[in-house]
Length: 52
Image (cartoon, rainbow, N blue to C red; front, side, top):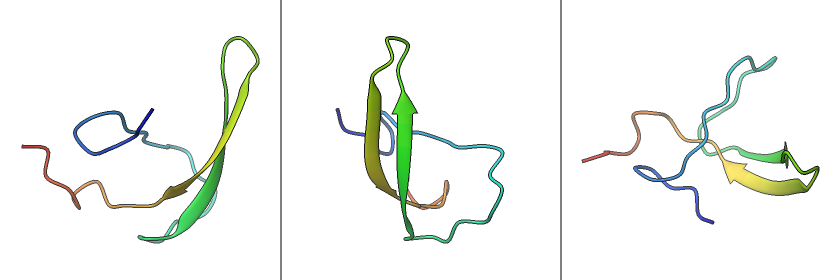
């Protein structure tokens, strides 16, 4: 599975601290069946990529 602009992507709301563009953050996702998926993601601006 690849998260990419114009395709699969993730938006995160309700952060308790600011993130900087190009910063790498580690995220943990918990699926409905209890599987935990951990990965690193690079922070990008919503306007950084064109969706055309």
